[in-house]
Image (cartoon, rainbow, N blue to C red; front, top):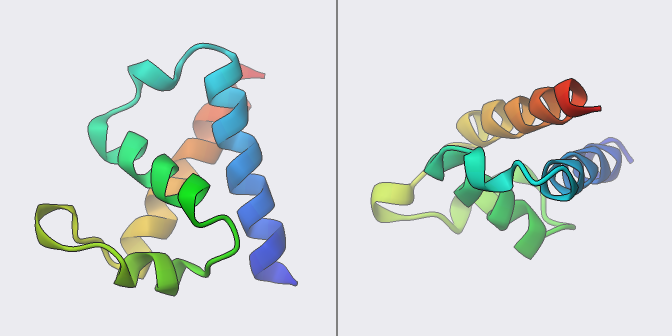
Length: 78
């Protein structure tokens, strides 16, 4: 399905960033977003967003924006 393909693309992007040694260069927000996706690889963005709270609370659209940013970063590294 579309969400599984998106999840795989996001996970591959995170893997690329880690393998290129650039994960530590990410902002705290992007690191947090990446760790959420890795922790919940099969969850929808809505499910992941519902797990966030307090100062780390993020909406589904905010999560999508950050994951798209991680994909863009990974593409630049390839």
